[in-house]
Amino acid sequence: MIKSVILNILGITYNESGIKIANFTISKESIYNTFEKFLKVIIILILMYASIKIGNGIINRFISKQKKLKFSLDDRKAKTVGAVLKSVLKYSVYFFGIFAIIEIVFGKIGSIFAGLGGVAIGLGGQNLIKDIINGFFILFEDQFSVGDYVSIEGKDGIVEGIELRVTKIRDFNGDLHIIPNGIIKMVTNHSRGNMRVLLDINISYDENIDKAIEVITDECEKFKNKNNNVVEGPRVLGISEISEDGISVKVFAKVKPMMQWDIEMKLRRDIKNRLDESKIKMAYKRVEVINTQI
Image (cartoon, rainbow, N blue to C red):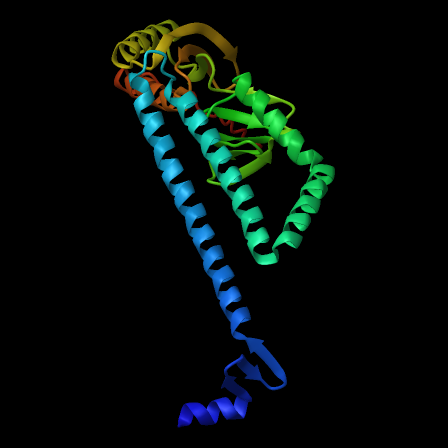
């Protein structure tokens, strides 16, 4: 009873031809066609989602098992290949899924619209094409891989993903930078080859500098024996500076990529502790007091 009253107030009535709302009549055939289109669109969206999920799972499984192959890739290149394959899968599914939805909703006219849209994309998508081509050359030339520490267009960080159109790097503040591949003109890759570590140890003028160098050299030898990430050194190069505050002793080492910061902090700590044990003072700021009283 209440339902009928509400429908009458809204001006909605049912009859054999369909639903009448005020002066407009919606036929049953139109309702069925609309519902069928809606159902097809939902099915396509579900298939798109499932295709991407299943495809990503297959790619992840392939990347994890490729190490067992005779010509396997290293971890970074494998992650890069995986990221690119996922990107290709995502864009392909989106492309075919969206055009299928357009054709379902608009029918043959939708196909014409889709064709016109393709022409528009072709005319206005020069930057997109440039991004894809440049992304291909980045991968082909192996300029950088996922996990590398790079500098690109003034941004420094770790490469998190390489796609057909963009490269994603995350800096040490946690910010994610998304850079179109088409604008990448110069790349500095900090992860290829061994990295250099240079320390300046400032010794007080009150200490015997030869003894200080001997202690630092001995500690460098111990440090090398207990750290597998050191490739060369560490060793004392000699006195690098004589300033008003003290004498600087330079220590040099080469370490594996991405380990330079960790090695530098640990080596600096160990040398400081060893100098303290040997009663050798570090340099300190000297203050001269002049008595101006007569």
